[in-house]
Structure formats: C-alpha cells, structure tokens
Image: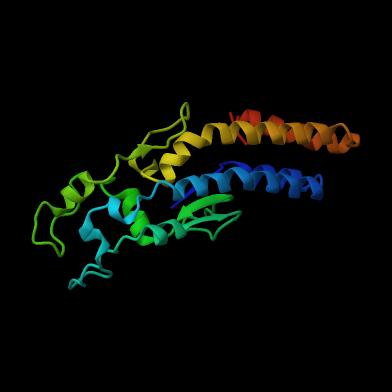
Length: 217
C-alpha cells in the first residue's frame, strides 16, 4: 500500500543519460520530503488507550479464515511505516513504484483502510455482536481522500485512508511543487554547460513531457 511521487522514474532515466552526479543529487532530493511523510504518518496512529479495548487483544483463529484479526499496538503500527527509494518489485501487471512510503503492519493497515470498501464492515467473524464491525469502524477517525486536487481521472476509494493517505493529502502538493522546482533549477543549470548535442536531449525530454500533458515531476 504505497504512496509514490509519480513520474520520477522516467525523469531519472532521462537525466541518467546526461550526468551521473546530477542523477545522484536528484535521488537525494527526493528522499527528504518522503521521510517527512513517513514521520508524520507515524504520528497519526493513536496510542493504545485511544482504540477500542477489544482491539488490543489477539482475536482467536476462525475456521476457514487464513489469519485472525490482528491485535493493535501503536509501536508496531508505527514500525510498519517504511520508506524506500525503490523501485520495488513489479506487480502482476508489470508495474513497479519508485520513491515510496508504505504501511506494512497488518493492524496498521486495518486502521488505514477499515470501512473503505463497506462502511458497515464485514458481518460475521468471531464476534457474537452482529454490529461489531460497523461499531469498530464508527470508532475510527474518518477516511481522507488523498487524490491530488486538479488531477484528471475518477476519484475512488482506493486513494483514501486515515494515516498515510491523510498525511499524503496534505503534503503532496508542496512536495510536487518543491521537487519540480528543484529538478528544473538543477537541469537548467546543467543545461548551460552542455555541448550542443546534449542540449538536444534535454529539450527533447521536455518536449515529450509537454506533449503528454505532463506537468509534474
């Protein structure tokens, strides 16, 4: 479950053909804001006294269920927030993500996503209370839509959450703006030093990016 700075991979591929030092510098600049996202996300997880007391207890195994419902622990949830420069392994569609923060603790993912697909939760389970799932979700903070404002495409539940996505909703605008400025400043400064044939590579990159309607990094 990652959030990712989109378009960085193709940008780095382009500048890698121009200058190794610049490539390394750009990667370093990407790290700082994403580490901030990771740190702020950890602050979103409530302490153990801030969740329903029953969630602190490990649920019993249920026949036909692969894993029991995970018990919550703030420290473990915070420890599940990971930053990776990437790229990660390709998924079954052949895609991988670059420069990302992910939520890798099971209870942390429950906090992040519970009710995203169904506000009433999943009926049944180990509880004798038929409303347990809905009551559990109602006790959590509201879901936050992290779709970038002004972006093209349908807004959907897949980009909502309570911790990582809540932070990303707030931080992504300034992150994109700052990174794009830093990258543009760097590449134009380097452009002035290039021989003519290399300048053509830089101009072609920006020309192709503009043709695709791509304005971010």
